[in-house]
Amino acid sequence: MKVVVAKNYDEVSRLAADIIVKELQANPCATLGLATGSTPIGCYNLLSDFCRRKQISFAKVKTVNLDEYVGLPSSHEQSYAYFMRRHLFDNVDIELANTAIPNGNSADIEGECARYSALIKSLPRDVQVLGLGSNGHIGFNEPCTPFDSTTHVVELAQSTVSDNSRLFDDLNDVPRRAITMGISEILQARKVILLACGANKAQAVRDMIKGKITPDCPASALRKHPDCVVIVDESAAVLL
Ligand code: F6R
Image (cartoon, rainbow, N blue to C red; front, side, top):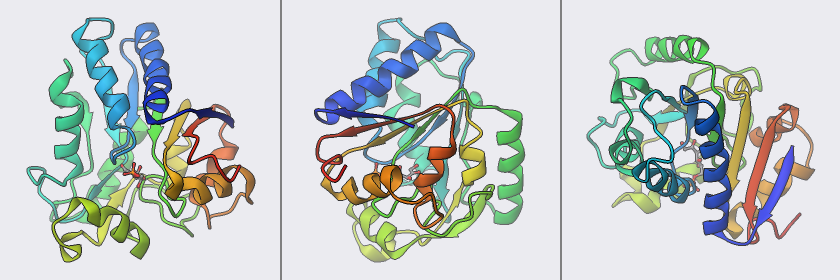
């Protein structure tokens, strides 16, 4: 695991975007694994700028997202499908047919997990972008998720519900369940970039990098990955 401490959020975003730009310039048909949440927004904005300037194209790119809330239609402003359109897909030349996000509104949630798992298998990712939960989660693999997990339905941890409540009008509106790519599937990407910013991530960053490799900190599984770059800002790095 390579660890890069950047000055601030803008520098984290720039370093992450640089890695993806290089990948897309070398491999225009790349498959990207994408995360939602506040952290990658700056990186997605930069990628959108690069695309507008025609320095990269998403025309042949495929994407697979990590996760989606259960019970929100894709038109809901807090769904991850909506997030991806707003922060990336609507701003670049990607074909929406080449993008994949679990359907959290499916009538058959277990069937949807199996479908998504098979899809992931058929689309090996060149680069996987990850954020980090304040409890050490990656995707929505909460603490104690086995490292060999595949796509599954998860009951969100209380800390995750409370972290994510900032984006909802009311705590009661935050979905309690999600579909997430499993840890074993995350680890299958050729290259992984994890981004973490802010003091509320400092303990999770420390546990991920310096703690035991244990399901208590799902992100510690990334230390088993042969090509994982962790890019954190100075506030998230204070406990290193
Ligand atoms: C989102 C995801 C989550 C977030 C994490 C950090 O698709 O998989 O693991 O990356 O909860 O979220 P932010 O960036 O909002 O702090």
